[in-house]
Image: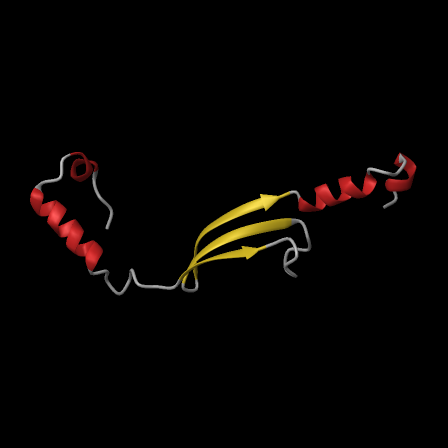
Length: 90
């Protein structure tokens, strides 16, 4: 239940009691299996380019945080001990 600015700034006692009761007795919509899933750089769907940290509520993705640049970092590490002409064809 979203709160309005007025409710947050100056809640009356009835609002506070209702909010506390709602927190103690969640509705069926609020009940779900919450999970954080790391769809990392070794996942077959990403091919080593991207890592996603997914927050799930049942089967619904509620938040996805991308972490990019894994392939670039790997190429940079491989090229550390090579000459330019050895790495460019790679």
